[in-house]
Image: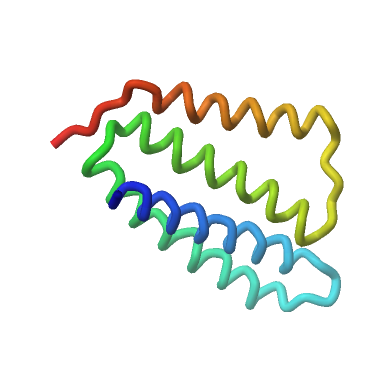
Amino acid sequence: MTNVLWLAIFWAMQVVAALSFKQGSLPDASRTLWFIIGNVFGASSIWFMMELYKTMNVNVAMGLAVGGAFLLSQLATALIFKSNLSFVQYIGLIAITGGMYAVSAGARTHP
């Protein structure tokens, strides 16, 4: 259960970082403020990945953490900034989900 919490927090923080960087790229945005926010969330989220490394195989932890963060960041930016994803891009997101499942299938925790 703890691993699920670490993953969820990591994913949420990575999504906030991605959204912050996108917001900072807009013409009327305060680039410095959004750059700082994005880096605070992005860099500090690594602590949660390190917690995953303590209890999971590093390859599984990295696959789930990075894959999920990318997947959720793509969906969040598409939804919030109304960028339309093509059919092929949706297939790519489904493939990432399948890859996350494949990486974690049969994985065991380690002490």
